[in-house]
Amino acid sequence: MPTYLYKARDSFGKPVEGVMEAPAKEALVERLHKMGYMTTHVTESGSTVRRETVFTRWRGVSQEDKLSFYVQLSNLISSGISLLTSLSILQHHLDNPRLKEAVEDVARNVEGGDSFSRALSRHPRLFPPIFVNLVEAGETSGKLDQVLARYAEYTDYQAELTQKIKGAVFYPALLLAAGLLVTLYVVTFVIPQFAEIFLKLGVPLPAPTLFLYAVGTTVQRFWHTLILAALAVGAGVKIYSDTPAGKLRIDRLKLKLPLAGSLLRLVAVSRFARTLSTLVESGVPILRSFEIVRKVTGNEHLARVIENIRQAVERGEKISESMRVSAEFPPDVTQMVAVGEESGDVGEMLYKASVYYDRLIAYRVKKLTIALEPLLLVVMGGIVALIMLSMLAPIFDMVRHLRR
Image (cartoon, rainbow, N blue to C red; front, side):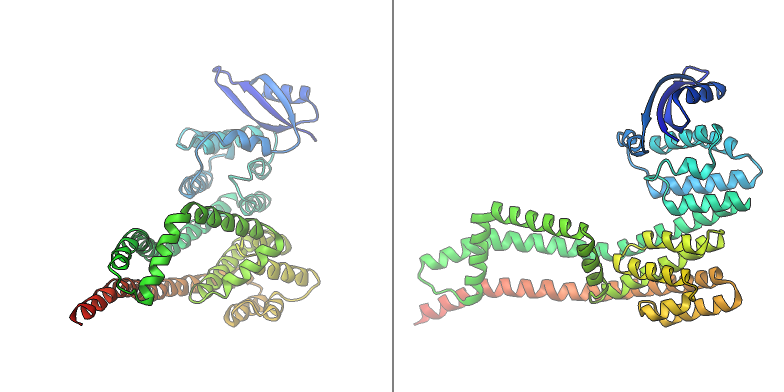
């Protein structure tokens, strides 16, 4: 069935636009007319991409905006208010124009006969596949309000986890950036002038001073070339990371990084357990759940491992056994999943595993922060010591030369 982009006016003359499927333009116009809209323009579109490009003129939608929408919609539906009425109420309370327009379009499509999940799927940049599949499961089971509440909790967890990691690296990153900028200024502008004074006096420069002098003069002469080279290297890494082989290799390397690698693995395992638990507990089929988890894991290497587990489960093998064979998941998680399979409650055991790893991540983040601060102080202290040595050593040599 073709998809159409349409523009119309409601009973108050307010212009509206959206996306809707229909057998033909005439059928779409008739459907809109029954809904109380006067159609002004209809254009056939093969996908929803064009609809999303219309939205790009608006500011982005933050996680806070989405979380507020999920929570409010769950509360309204759990209160016994119908889906269409709930969406209509939310249209007047949403502050974000992009999200508001998307909800209006979803409401029109639901009013036109689409299911809620199908109407949401027309806006993939706003509503991810995990949310669409959860809504579909909620519609099938009749527990849409519970599914929405569970997804709101899941979204809140993801935002909190991201905030914890950002907060842990913010201060060390700021300290490192400030230190590097000051060092670059001293090496580029101060050291060369200082060294040239001694060279004019005929005082021999020690090795540290000669090294920093060479670095500073090189940056002064070829700063534009260095910037272009850095941009070229960055672009090359970005292009390589966008290829399947490059993304796989880089994601594998991330998991092997000192200090950060173990934390990234813990985050991925926690996200895997929490996402799979949310999907299974909401009634999404296990194979479909693994497909979604593979897309949201955030690491290509682990995504391929999850795909191998999905294929093994499809062949009739146990989830825990496939996880154990992969050797990518901690033994305690594998054991908890095995217990869940024996008791018939895999979702609950995965949720308990995610809660445990949330606490472990918080501990590791704190430990990483404690380890990074003295490490950065040692690095910056070493740089400062090198700069001081390069400046003081010629002075001592000149004093010794004058005494003779």
